[in-house]
Image 1: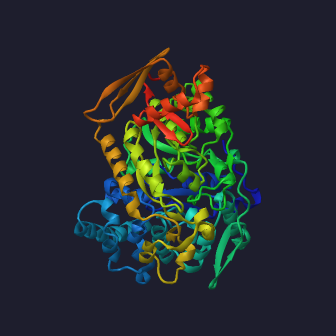
Image 2: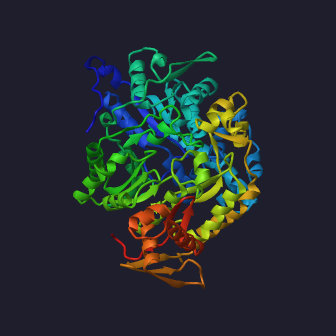
Image 3: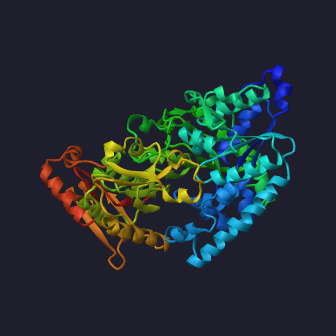
Length: 629
């Protein structure tokens, strides 16, 4: 299953002389291979170039120990990872040789553990001892025949990539360095090409076509700067050609090659040499966002120039998963897609179920999935989803332009819990137009949702490049928008931070102070702590025609069972499958019940914390006690 173009026989010898290495530097997650490296390797190989990948992040993880390495990968906003490599990347021009960042970000870096003094000692030792030793070891072997080194950079990989590139060019002056990835999209790539001298060329859009065409130009002795999506420094200026339209047919792409990742991980002792692996293998079945094409969520900075939604056929995804499972002996797959192609609900997932595959799958999804759809996903092997819930308030969700209601978010949590799907989600606040009442209402609901999976975090939104908030500041009352302050501790004065930053500090008119959200944040922390303790609350029901029992074990010391008969039982069950209105319940039951009677019953259920009310919508909170249906 290739799809790559065959090289021109006339150029075969020339291409064979351009040995290429595609590198992934810290702080790329060490727990799984990079799809960027794996895919580009397969693409470039199809063009006839000798190419290998280098998951160099693994060497640093092995040096530090995974327990110390991974926390440095997890936070994308404060650039502590880039800061660790800043001195190695920029030498005397590095802006923080004395390590002021550790003190100035003392509160923000508390997640790394230890006292301030311990963190300072540990981080400075990593920066001043581990980083140079690590880079020196990397440069020592395997570069003599290399002509091109490509660096894929996302989030906090820039400084480490610059540091290695600088050392390589000092040792091997004729090596051509090419940078790409999300950190080089658009004007970010142009500015970094202009201001960082170890960057020879940059790919500023999707690299599947631009990178191999760039290599072909180099092999032919031609200037690659005219290729769509390529930038090159000429003197103090940059020649940059805008990217071509995004690739449409994803089925034509080859299957990513992860062989080097697994070999290197085992050699470094990060993975055991076992017959069956449990590594999550990244795969791509779609690019862009079909919802963002219609209504771009106000805070989302993904898909800056590639919002157009494209997906692989279900048949291609099915075949690719099977091939990767055989090749790498793992049955766990994590989709890197920003949103699930809804056609897979009818095409891909039933095929997986019918073929008795034993995969564990993770997807990002929209939150308006129904019970039946979640059942289909679970039967096909979905074990985790990231639905982008973001809030428990419909007015706030409308400010975000999420296109879902709070009741739908709660309903997804219910049925995900029932079908044993792990949900990764967050609560965000800080949007212009929020009210104190909306914040308090969310805090008041949290104790009633204790039996459902809590959010990973709750906090103020980040301002991201490419988001509507950033791109149209006047529309949202943005008064201040400056690069997040940790950028000043990483990049020298000659780099225009306004053009390279992805995260921004900001102020907006019509937003509430942090103190307004204190009650909600505390409620979420208690919710998370309860789940972390292992004593998970429950709210479940048993039903028979005209009869309902609900066991409520959400509040320690107040456990008990509710019993409802007749119309009350019927009304509750009518609100269980999905959010609904009082009038729809009346119509569904076909009884001569006044709408007002139904509405009063729903309100009484809500007062007891047994239903979630969302303006005109109501949804039962209890989950069926009998699972698997």
